[in-house]
Amino acid sequence: SFILTIYEKRVDEADLPFFLGLMEHLAGKGVSCPLPVHQRDGAVIGRLARKPAALITFLEGVSLRRPDAESCREVGKALGELHVASTDFALSRPNALAMDGWRTLWAGARDRAHEVEPSLTAELDEEFRSLAESWPNALPAGVIHADLFPDNVFFLEGKLSGLIDFYFACNDFYAYDLSIGLNAWCFEKDGSFNQTKSRALLAGYQSVRPLSEAEREALPTLCRGSALRFLLTRLYDWLTIPDGPLVQKRDPLEYISKLRFHRKISSASEYGLS
Image (cartoon, rainbow, N blue to C red; front, side, top):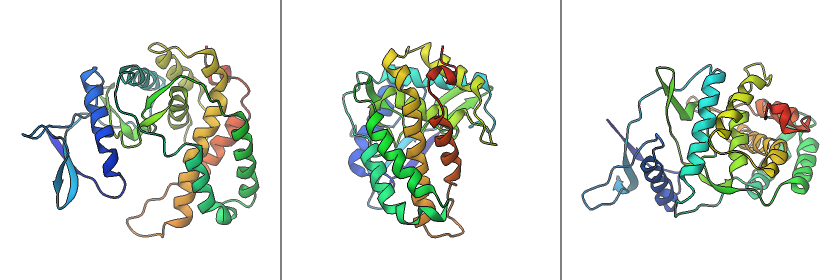
């Protein structure tokens, strides 16, 4: 089975060689992910209705609604495998949603942030100041997925069957990608942090790619940064996109809570990192 994907506003056509090339590279290294299909002329990008399009293999599986610790371990392992497999990928793409991108989002939402929570403007101004001072600048880096949420990981018969949606993939710190995973997989519906899940996710990752001491020390800061990144995209959409029957906006309060949790963390051992 195949999926015909027509690329519209969400994806810049200039980035398609990176995204599709990455999927092909990872699949060639044994990472289970969708594989672009080559046309007769060898190209993977065609046009349909004057828009770029590609035919991509269908990946079997479903996303989990209630991941447990073992599924978190598998996710961590798969993320480590992705990082290792992509080390010799020839193309690169800067992270458009790194700190400069966060500042752009904040500039577009700041004047109305009080509508979500009265004290949010001052709180996030201070968070930007703090992260600018503490953000690491020399950690191991390479291609990251950058959006490894439960809906982008498929499972089949209780086992991880593959990763999808590489359209935020870019080059950044590997441990930043890991922090995105901790935020996406290790909090419960009530907002509480599940250390059993985080310990499993981190152990799975380190079974493939052990973290350096610098990465361990930076992990609480990186978790704050990735929480801020998703808080800001949600906040910006919440305040600027008009409501409508087909519009699904995600509540920024979820990531405000996560950001506040990470501020209280002083050591990666509190995430269960051994």
